[in-house]
Length: 236
Image (tube, rainbow, N blue to C red; front, side, top):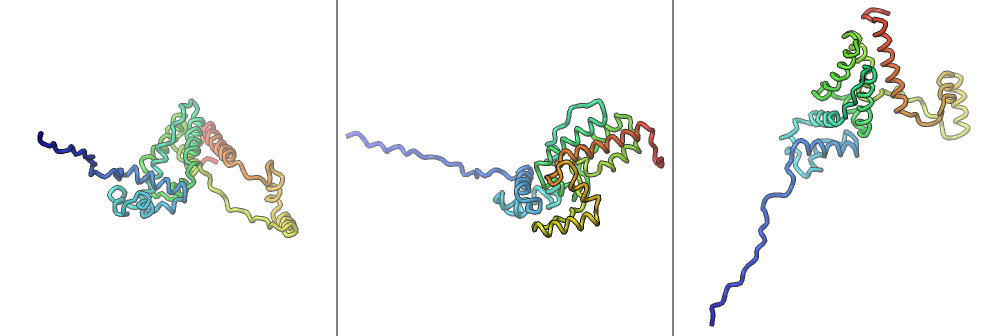
C-alpha cells in the first residue's frame, strides 16, 4: 500500500502593515479645508480635524505647530491654486485679471475672507501675489509712491473681496407697519430711500460680482489718472 501523502494546505498571507494612509501635512490641510467649506472656519479646530482623520489631536502637532499655523496653511493652499492670468500689455488689465482670478478661486470657499483678514503676517504665498500686483504696476511705469498708494487703495480688494458697510435696518413684514416705517425713513433719510427704491434692480439682491468689478475699475482708472498726471506725494 503506497504511503499516504499529506494534503496541501493553502494559506492566504495577509500583510500586517496597516492599510491606513500615512498622516502628513497635505492630508491635514485638505481635511481642514473640507470642514471649513462645510461648516465654517471656526469648525476647523485641531480636535475636529483629528476626529475626521481618525487620529489623536497630538498626532497633528507633528506636522502643524498650532491652529493659527493650520489656518495659514489653508490660506496658502488656496493661493497656490489660483491660476496665473494671461500676460497683458496694459498694467491695469494685468492687475485686474489677477485680482479677478483670485476672487473666482476664493469665492468657492466662504471662509477664505475671514481667514485672510485675520492673518497677522503675510506668508510667502501671500507675498508672491502682492509682488505680482506691484510688478505689473512698476512695469506700467508707476512710481514707487503711486504703487504704495495704489496698494492701500485696493486694500482687501487685492484678495478679491469687498468690505461691506453697516447693514441698513430691514422693514417690517406687516404691510401697515412697513408703510409707516418707509414714510419715516423717507422723511429722515431721503437719499437712502431714493437709492433703495429707484435704482435699477431696487428690491432685488445685488450683483456682487458686477459691483466688485465696477469698484475695481474705478480704483484702477483713478490710479492710472494720477500716474498720467505725474502725481507726487503731497500733490492735491
